[in-house]
Image (cartoon, rainbow, N blue to C red; front, side):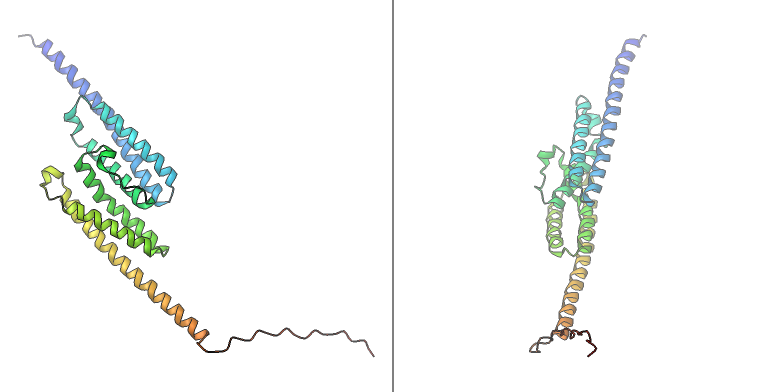
Length: 231
């Protein structure tokens, strides 16, 4: 029995699939790396650099998708999903840090699973940004971002589907909840300390300048000495 012609056909197909996989895997890794660098740039307030890195990540993801267009089984094998998730995380972090429009799934061209998991992980990056804002005393902005974290959490917790459908979203949602609780506790402590500091400063100012007290006298200039004439 001669199976050489069958062997040749199978080998051709496997070679093509392997080549496509390797190309897509390389592009996906580059996309993930660009997303990570974009988030780091955002935390350093380098918005222009972050924008360029997000564009680079999108290009790499598009290249990976194109390489696997004829191989949907490989496209949904896992590594491409991870790259999509990282792209969503970076875009959501960018939107919240820069106060830009919040990205929708159809704009990013990602799966619902990648979008929701990327949103969950963006909450952790947002905590880091909020802690930085606390150190600079920008508590009003912190409160706004805490509200955004709550909104994202409520969306995620409403996605009550089996893990086989969401690819493990429930665990990430639980992690996000603990991050939000810790962040809210840190914010409360910071707000109390800020109020106490303001009250102490006001009290110290009242001690220095009590109500009804006359204004402090201006110091008089010393009399000028006239040179002696010797008479």
